[in-house]
Length: 97
Length: 451
Image (cartoon, rainbow over all chains, first blue to last red; front, side, top):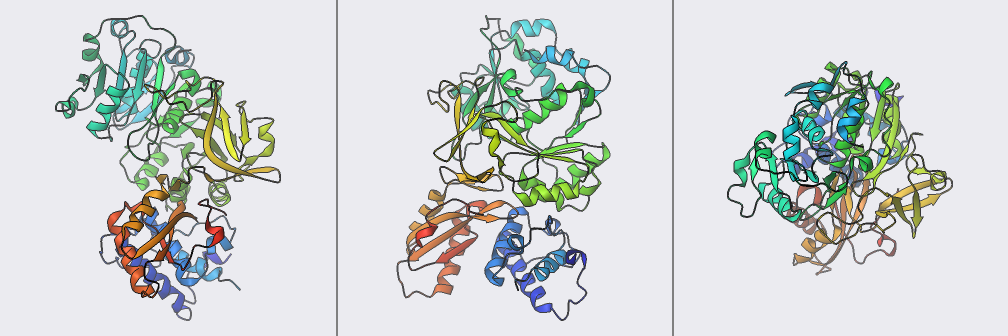
């Protein structure tokens, strides 16, 4: 399963990583009265990043708007990414063909 | 049937409830209050506004079968709303942690800190019929409605198995003063299980720590909360034997995620509402429920579909709201749940709320309220608000708007409207997506989440 592989080819695919990080930072600020987002690492647990579950829900909707796809509706896998790195891997693994 | 007698049937061998305030055995619950207190309170109508069920449980055991009615309400409500509820329901006294919060609110019945002092101010009256357990509904706007249950209507579907119950330890994730929370409390206590109650205001990871520490085996939560649980690093250390979902519509993904996360657990989603009580439970780990339930209901409670709406029958609950003339059920007990459903093959699937209310992770949003806010803005000439399905909160608010000036800069206007809604609305009501359109698309008319 692709989901458990964490960021082996991060550099070559850094475009997706940066896009997701940009949207994350935007959503974080909008949900925290303009505060800049803290530094996010691959191991950062999403629900402990300062973004609550509503913020997290908004992130996924904004990512769909920006990237043009929603891996949660593409993949039927019983899975929710827990860390930022897992989230990026999940979007990478489910890019529509 | 009264609570004290039901408690007497379980063995007094172990503790039944534990919270930061302490733990209680069966006998400590039953014998906490003396007979003369119960005598004085005959026929009374009391508001119970207490934060910890360890404090409340002995009170429930003392009052059931004695008083005419009590209402459970969370102390997280404002003093004004508690007072207005007390007045509206004709309640005669309030039992709470801080009586002084009511001192400036005119008309509030007297408030007391302990049941003994409260009882001193009462003289016994005749009680007709069973004690009414008044539950509050989640009012979206304004005041909560009051639904009159009895112990019988609350536990009509509860399987009480005291033999198996002794090895069960329920974790409390709900507010016990609400219908779902009281279900967990009664199920656990009446089966002789241990109920583990973490502080309500604690962070989820702390609650999980407490559950691991006490070897919790059964948990009940909303799908939104379950999604948070499976995203917590320490949650897989809870050795669950049962995972129950309720309060919101459960989808396939969360059901299958829970079952792969907790492979030993039976995964059950329950359909219930404060008005209808518990309707049915589904254990096959799929969204919706089997069509066959219409003929063979899973818990013996009749259900039917009429004009795409789901009805549940509850013959035990009083069909009008307490202290009001408004009926929520027909006289023979059919409650319109307000949920629209669709039959697909051998399955009945939920398609949203009849009134268009959007459920954002348990918080309700009226699309009309968001539309009104958008329409006040001078740049907007028309707005349509709908639910967009979401894997984390079930749904989010989304909006389509038509601009007054069709030549306006789309990108700038979009930003203006985003900032504006963020300022004007509660967080969960803010549209996560605002789409600027020249006209509304015909098929977007439904405000129903279609998956």
